[in-house]
Length: 176
Image 1 (spheres, rainbow, N blue to C red):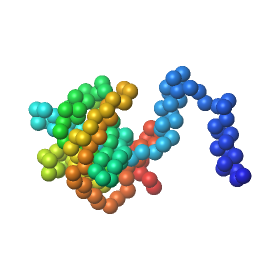
Image 2 (spheres, one colour; image 1 turned 90 degrees about the horizontal axis):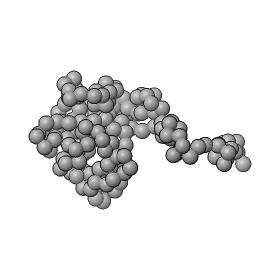
Image 3 (cartoon, rainbow, N blue to C red; image 1 turned 90 degrees about the vertical axis):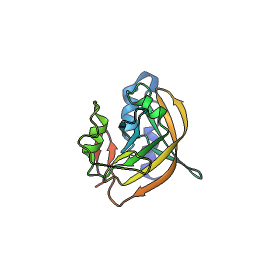
Image 4 (cartoon, helix red, strand yellow; image 1 turned 180 degrees about the vertical axis):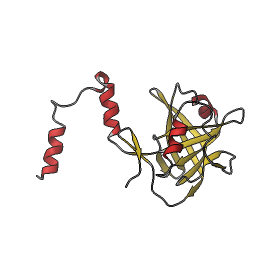
């Protein structure tokens, strides 16, 4: 047996680790070990105002029909807008867009003020320079603990070349 397999076997010995219910911080640290892409989800609220948040809970679900999912904290001030929205756009950020990610992750209503945007065919503003934009219609909504899971049917995609922005161990960075 090679050394890497032996090392993995040792790491999962019954004497190691803690039950997640006893140590939420350990759970968050463990999740942070998994690098994820970074995206911004934007939509129009019921009053027609643009809303947006940074996410790293984005995944493909199905090719036929084309479905993606993401999640939002149930108690987020923006949750009602996204839960009620018929359409939204998910923009996968490029490595040079950490300022965009931080702007949409922070508090406040002025998330779009310092971000150059363009409108999708659905009229939703998205950050310029994103590596991919998924224009979605709401397909389904599911409870997921302290979050809501939103499933979107992708109607249109736009892509460009570039290096993605990644979130790993609490930091934003490129792959390089």
